Amino acid sequence: MASLHQNRSNTDSVQVALHGEIDMATAGDVVTAVEDALVPLVPITIDLSDVRFIDGRGVTALVRARASAAALGSAMELVNPQPTVLRILQITGLLP
Figure (cartoon, rainbow, N blue to C red):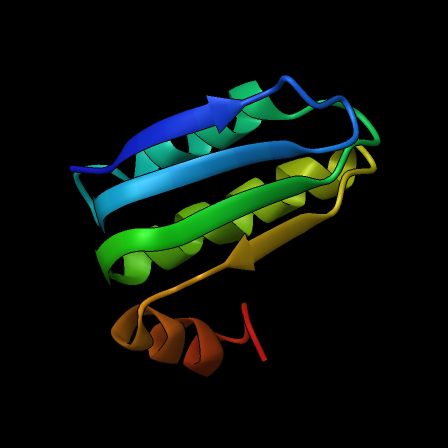
């Protein structure tokens, strides 16, 4: 299951760290967590360094989270994915 850590102490950016697996069982929690952390016009960084697996539902969750951020005028950046997660994000176009 994905767990998260949010840091809102810096009003110049918001950081969310995800852990574990982002899959059918946890995708909804990921979207909710990211949406709850969003601040209008403030960029959000999603740290994926501790995510070891992502499936199609997980990718969809990140796409939804990015759309929610964009709707508030906030950029969303995905950082530090492990190699297997990076490859999925590259295939799907979420990362170059």
